[in-house]
Structures are given as structure tokens and as C-alpha cells.
Length: 128
Image: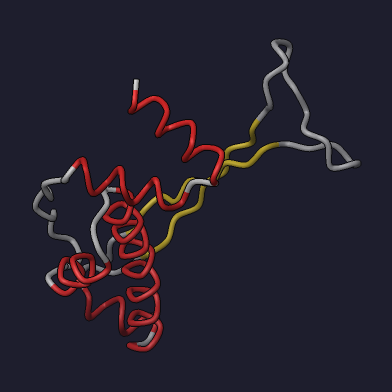
């Protein structure tokens, strides 16, 4: 079986839940580790945890990756249809091809989300 060391780090706090600082005024951290046996392959992991648990955890991890990708594509100014098309082609664990960004569409997308004052300020800069 494939045991793996799992490291955990957390900020140390006092009894009042206030971060304990070091001599430089930076937060102090505690580090702790333990080993966990994931098995040698997917079958071992399923035998240990159950198919449903492995599936549920895989979906949760993929969901986080998809959320990150959707945010990134939206910030690049892609339309909802273009984002959906990109997500339809997504394969977890495979690096996605870089998407060409249309700077005009990206700016228009950002502009639409700004408040009126920021939009006016931007238009004045464009008009020179």
C-alpha cells in the first residue's frame, strides 16, 4: 500500500482566539503530519473508502477546478455560450489549451460590471 505523509499547518492562537506573533510581528504556525494509506491504485482506494466516497470526492475536486476555469474564462471576456463550449470540452487532469482573448470583448465585459461613476471615468480616459 502507498502510505503518504499528509502535512497540516495552522496559525497558533491564544485562549482569546488572537494570533500569536513572533519577534518580527508575524503570525506563528504549528506544523503537524500523519500518514494515510491511499492504496496502490484506484481499486485499493475504492476498497478502502467505497466507490461512492471516491466518486463524491472526485466530483468535489473537479467542481472546484471547473469553478476556477469558469471564473477565468469570464474574466477574459468570453460569452456564456463560449464558456459552456469550453467547459463541454474540459477533461479533468488534462491541461486546457490557452484561449485567445479578445481584448475588446474582455474590456466590454468588465465595463458592464462597473458602477456608473467608474464607467464615466473610463470613458473620459478613452476620449483623451
